[in-house]
Image (tube, rainbow, N blue to C red; front, side, top):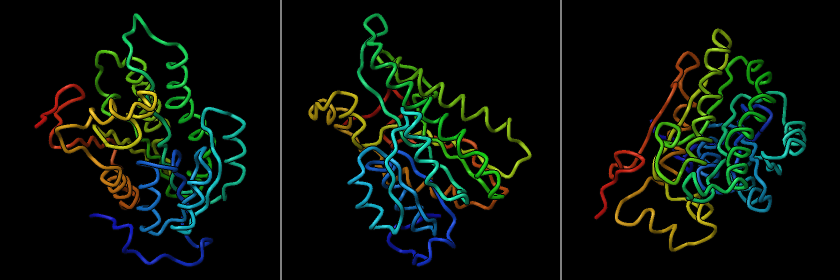
Length: 258
């Protein structure tokens, strides 16, 4: 089942729609996910640091924009305080990579940012919203990790270690809340053409473009479609882990390029 973000008629009254929270929603997978969930009938609360982008998207999908920096505990607290009590879905999408140094040349600042964003950011939002998600009677935590949560590769230990930790956090929740009305889905994409590589390489657009050269990568919309599919399954269906890659990619380190 595909969710078309242009096809669904939205309920004009946000108070009657289930609420979905999407972090990192100002671009890429987060923005695409917001569109797909809105099309599926959710009132989407978008969180990110780039508030102007959020406001434009919120106006487009009849959602709510709120500033959020997942690396800042105070920002998370303020964001959560503004949310409606009836939250049903949390999409932990905020994250990213910085740098590509071998361990012997690791930049601790880059590592700290990756762990704060991918691991502690996911912890902060999930911990804060779990009571509301459970109370909804059909809560759902969807965490966007990566194939880097399943494999390691040279010059990527900062990111792969953070994604492994984020995935371990998420998977642990499945057992800790067994028997409660809340589901947990991990979505682990391979190569997706977004701003991810530009951020990783400090704005070097040529180096970022080379990551996807010679193959057809996934788009943010491809991943968002999968997220929305998981979020719209019947309450008794838990898609524990979804790994998706381009047809041209076999693993984190092996791809076919033309």
